[in-house]
Amino acid sequence: MRIICVAGARPNYMKIKPVMDALEARGAEVLLVHTGQHYDPAMNDVFFHDLGLRPPDRFLGVGSGSHAAQTGRVMTAFEPLVEEIAPDLVVVVGDVNSTLACALVTAKAGPLLAHVEAGLRSRDWSMPEEVNRVATDRVSDYLLAPSDDAADNLRAEGYRDDQIHVVGNVMIDTLFANRERARQSGALAELGVSEGEYGLVTLHRPANVDDPDILAGLLKGLGEVAAHCPLVLPVHPRAAGKLHALGVPGGIRLVPPAGYLDFIALQAGARIVLTDSGGVQEETTALGVPCVTLRDNTERPITVEQGTNVLAGRDPARILATAVRLLDDPPPPRRPGLWDGKAGERIAEVLLEGGTAGTRPRPT
Ligand code: UD1
Ligand code: UDP
Image 1 (cartoon, protein in one colour):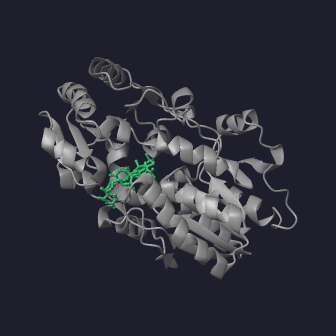
Image 2 (cartoon, rainbow, N blue to C red):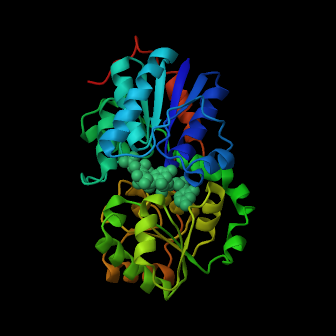
Image 3 (cartoon, rainbow, N blue to C red):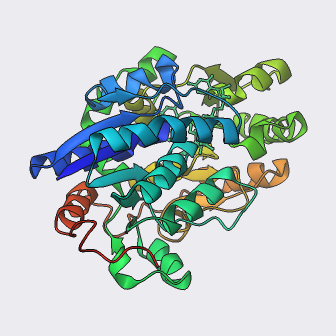
């Protein structure tokens, strides 16, 4: 079976790697297509190096742009590639613009389409990712859900049971595969921080970083947390300009975006993590590290119900109160079912035994 695997932005690489490995181990012919949505060495190259991901077979080089421009450029570049390669199946992961763009092209071109991380819903339509998730699921043949709550969302939306497969969380496969290597990374020593004595922050959601007033409010809350526990903030390029222009309160250190192994080491060693990232909510849950999510909602409720995550929103007083509560009384570590490092294997099993475009019922 010939399969195109798509990746293009930071959170895609750790999700696609275990899927590619498991497919290739079972004899599939796999081609990695990189859309180029992220391109800075710190947002891209370092992940290929850290994860041992082989160089992409094809690179679309789309770069940054408005949602329409970026999505359209990926579609325009991906369409002739699908025609040339003629895959049996295309695998997309997550919820970025590259995910949706390649899903739409595939749905019209004919190959089967598999969505890894199907069924996640924040129910917040102001998030571009929510549009990408819902629309990608709608045109997918295989809905590969990380958890039961995601499968429940899909059933509630009317998807057939034969489309839905609860396979576990591929991001956690990669985390477990690299936890020991991350321990050797030296990231804590390089930053001069000690295990259990600092907090780690990430911020990149448009709703948090695009409006300087909202960002200033978040920084006020984080500054108050830093009075209890010094904070390290690896800066996402979307937030860089505004963070440097606003300046940050004392106790918060801005550092460049971290590579994968360094960032896992920083999460594992942190006393607390404060974030608006989707993946980081899951990784902190798997690592048993307290997490304060700087959003009012999450598409990953399992990290709240069965993990260490607490939603704190954007109000500075609530951020401080939540962080202080977790610092004083950390939630017990728990790990959701099927977060066992074998999601990639289960996905390969489903996809390679699932039939071909001629034999499978398509989305209804
Ligand atoms: C994208 C995803 C988001 C994901 C995030 C992971 C969408 C709609 N958003 O958000 O879901 O959580 O990636 O990090 O797909 N930039 C650089 N260098 C880069 C990449 C981006 O400087 O290598 C800057 C550019 O100014 C760009 C901006 O960051 O305009 C935003 O990049 P973009 O890929 O559009 O969205 P992200 O905010 O990164
Ligand atoms: N990550 C990283 N370096 C950083 C910040 C995040 O390696 O400086 C990793 C993190 O461990 C997780 C992934 O990037 O594996 C999450 O990506 P991001 O937060 O950019 O996107 P989201 O998950 O919100 O879509």
